[in-house]
Image (cartoon, rainbow, N blue to C red; front, side):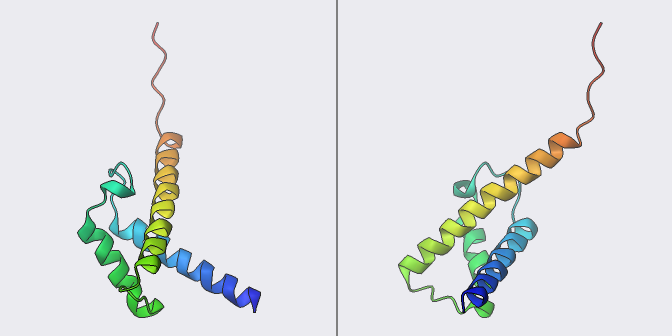
Length: 93
């Protein structure tokens, strides 16, 4: 039973990360800066596959926290990748 719950959690987290990557802009400073209509759209995309009860404020807060932490991780990964691929400037004499 525990493995099945872990698989479901991992699938949900994967879906969240894919949505963030596909629908969000890395130029946004933080999850707070993401427009509400984008956040609502992300939940609406998840809703059919995950049977999300949008009338439950505790569930919606939990989902928002998941998006927030996933956004932070994704943004860090994007910035790190950008830095790793940056072409160094030649030393000045």
